Image 1 (tube, rainbow over the protein chains, first blue to last red):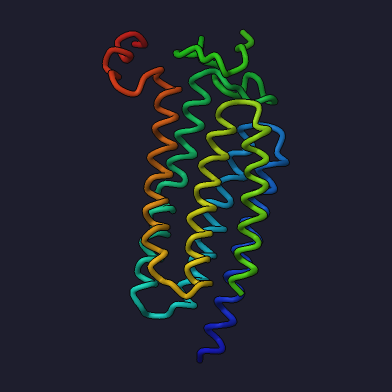
Image 2 (cartoon, each protein chain N blue to C red):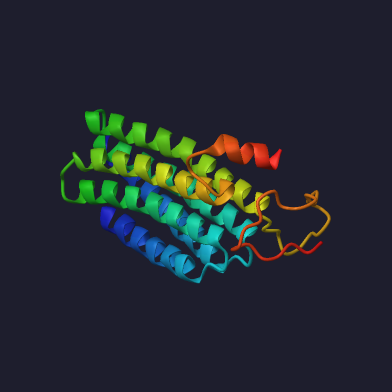
Length: 122
Length: 94
């Protein structure tokens, strides 16, 4: 029984680590802010959950697993929320994706002109 | 087994730090800081398991809470130009 649990936790931890590295590598390699949002959320969701699963299996039915589940639920809720907040702040202050002009409904002018965002091509 | 996870997390942290340094726009950096925080939470958890001290998970939970609040605070400042008096800003925009 414990051998199976060990193998499962080993698999979960390995795949979680793989997703973490893939997400981090995507964060570096992707050309544009808007495509990096996807890469970051890969680590926030898949990598984190699999790693937490591996640790929960390793810890068995103890208080540690309860704490791990609490952390996993919290991260699962706040990860996408934070990513959405970043995307909203970027869009409103005028950061536009490189490709696909016209696809995004062009706001007439960014409501809050931001010194850090590139000037908006009218 | 957890050593593999620790090494992977460390590599992930280094990559995200590079994005934090090179990120052209401000929001790349905010994204990188948020991702670095998540990596740190996982790293604390893994180190807790490695060193056989389960009470590290409380620190990891606290770090996750503070990381989220920090990210939202920075974004709120750059989105609304102020953290405090939002009603005054809303009147200007609408």
